[in-house]
Length: 212
Image 1 (cartoon, rainbow, N blue to C red):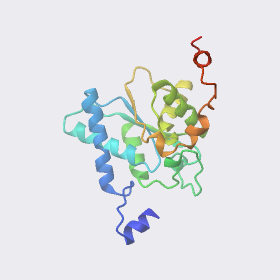
Image 2: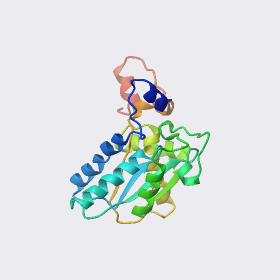
Image 3: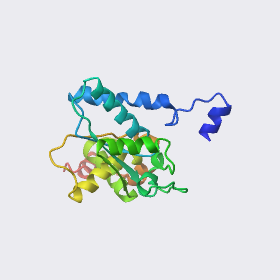
């Protein structure tokens, strides 16, 4: 729909089909290197249309070519299990996942993502909705970072590999969480504790707060 609108009406297409978007996003890799002093050993991202993994890999390569980074990272990407065309090696006609931003059955940057994976010695795997929601709640509860469920796919993947004993030790790992939680608040509302209504009395409030 967005593509058709952009071809026939004065609408700018700003998803991963737009090459300017990839070149804009690659500067994220520049920022990572500028902050760390070099590229990380691993960079982990959620994968939907595969623009982010493509863009970051391009950015790292350019910084390495210009002598601003000494190494290149392994690129690790994670798709939702119900929407994992790259993992399965075929188009998913009816992708099904709660991670709406990566619910994509035919990624625009499919080939580039495979190149990023293979050229970097990385991987692209999948995580379940349950794993995504667990990571989503974890990063909010432990780090105070409110992301949309799709953005937690990379974290979910790291946790999955850690539990399986497959996560390399002693590595510097960067994880990109790609979208703010306000983009998809339904799961936040469902996960939130129900409010407890109390009388307007200080003693009762103190007790409810564990202060007395």
